[in-house]
Image (tube, rainbow, N blue to C red; front, side):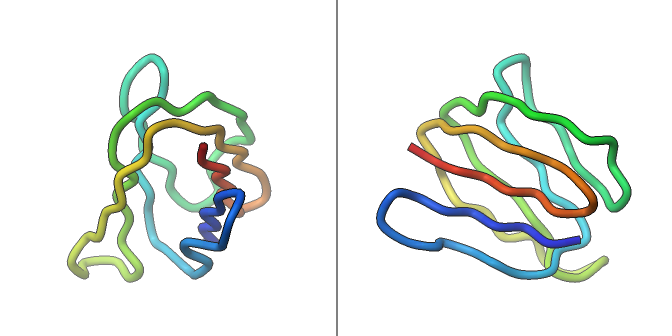
Length: 79
């Protein structure tokens, strides 16, 4: 699936991932391939993702934003 993380200034990440964990308003949640469509508010925390299954996970800190998951594309817009 594709993960896109953007801010008002630039694209922070745009690539293929096997999973992504996001800091949702009601707690952390993980998105895997073929996840149901959703839109959620994100809060202060870390986006954790793995570019390949079994590989080391990477993370980036965010202060908040929104995420849209649809058709194996996870689009994150951060504040």
